[in-house]
Structures are given as C-alpha cells and as structure tokens.
Image (cartoon, helix red, strand yellow):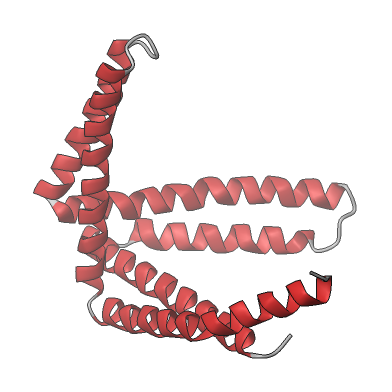
Length: 187
C-alpha cells in the first residue's frame, strides 16, 4: 500500500465520521443552551457529578488499600480514601455547597495560574521571545475572572459555574462541528 493509498483511506474514514462529529457538536450546543438557560441547575448537576466521583474515588481507595497491603502506609491510604468519601457525601448531602466550593476552587486556580503566567511571560520577555505580552494579558484575564468569582455571592457562584459549563459545551460543540465540516472535504 502506498502513502497515497493510506492518505486516501484516512480521508474516507474522516469523511465517514464527519456526520457524527457534526451531530455530536449540535447536541453539545443544545446542551450548552440548556445550561445557559438553567445555569443554577447546571452548576448543581456539576456538583452532584463531582460528589459521586469523590465517593467512588474513596471507595476505590479503600478497596486498593486492602488489596495492595504494603504498597502505601495504611494510615495515609485510609485518610486519603476517607477524605474523598466524606467530601463526596457532603457534596451530595448539600450540593449547593459543593457547587460553591467548585467555584472557589476555580477562582483559586485562576489566581495561581495568573501568577504562573506572569512569571512565564516575564521570563519570555527576558529571553527576547515575541508574543510574551499575551501571557501577561492572559494573566490579567485570569485575575479579573478570579476577582469576579470571589466578589459574587455564593448563589451567584453556582450560577456562574453553570455558565462556565454552558460556555465549555458551546466551544466543544463548535469545535466538533468545525472538524466535521472540514472532514467532509476531500483531502
């Protein structure tokens, strides 16, 4: 098989997948619209999913602790599993607090990322790299977003989390539709 044959086969495979990319993109955009219309529900749903993930993580931590004795100190393994399990149960018990915690974690991430991006940007400036200013701009955007999250009240944080989810779904949907239409074109 020649390189041209392989390229032609890959092109056919992509063209066959194009409708699926487009369909998935449309579904994600529809879900983004639902999340944007019901941001409180989307934020609470994210908290509930996160709570179940923590519970399952805790259960698996206990199973692994008993299944692999000697792999890690039992006290630290038990503490890690217990913390995940209890945090998951608390989020499921009070999902609005879980959603608020997620929003605060996002704000903390944005603050730390802003510091890191500033450091990288200044380092790139010192090295004479072009485009370093965009790292500083990105850092400033992170700081503004973190400040907005921290300045909002708890209920607004849950709604904001829902809007973040809507935005993420929208961007993923657009990306998939774009890939789908690009795959429909012959190579």
